[in-house]
Amino acid sequence: MLRALRSLVPDAKPGSEGMSFSQCGEDRIVRWVLEILRVRQPRYLDIGAHHPRRLNNTYLFYTLGASGVLVEPNPAWTALIRRERPRDVCIEAGVGGRPASGVPFYVMRSDTLCTFSGREAQRMVAECREEIRAIRSLDVVTPAQIQAEHFTDRLDFVSLDVEGLELEILRAFDFDTSRPAVFCIETISYAIDGSGEKAHDLIAFMQSRGYAVHADTYVNTIFVDEERALGLLRPGRREERP
Image (tube, rainbow, N blue to C red):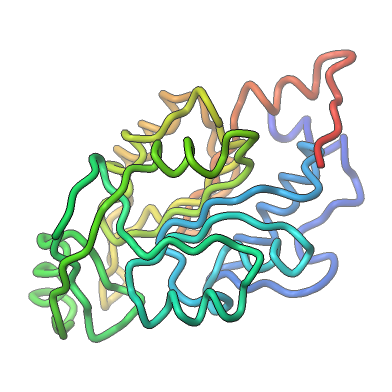
């Protein structure tokens, strides 16, 4: 199905211009897919945004004039995000399966590994020579709450990287009201020797919600809404999006 879509935009090739800000070029792949889907200025939701530019899956789209919502619980990063990406909404909170207050947030020595999962934090200490530097109490909101408040019109792209809680968050998504066209989700657990486990249950869940695996960079998996993609192959259905 996705192979057939490639013929619709023959000149949209990953890496054909500019650079990538993602860990493994995921933003270039996502941009290529969105070009195929006729989405020129995507509305994005970046859950676990971390740095506003470095290893970030949505900054490329920001440089091209798009905007969205970045969720980051670490106040050190939210201050930088608000300064460097003023068009975006920045939410300083966690995201989970249900709203809550005073939820422990584990600040790890490696700032890319901070997490709300106590189990994942302890695993990284035991197996990955990590260290818990601090535990902060923060609020948690659901993805459906964010969708209802910020994406009443549309949501095109979701980047999700939360160190172990991805599946819980996905189960709380509203896939009907503002159904994203593309997801980029971390699907490998962190391991210091590179032996991380693939989240096959997460991949199966996304497929059960009607998303096909388009690409996998070992670290992240990129999913595309099958119905949206198939719609472009039907006569008279090539709609143009902003």
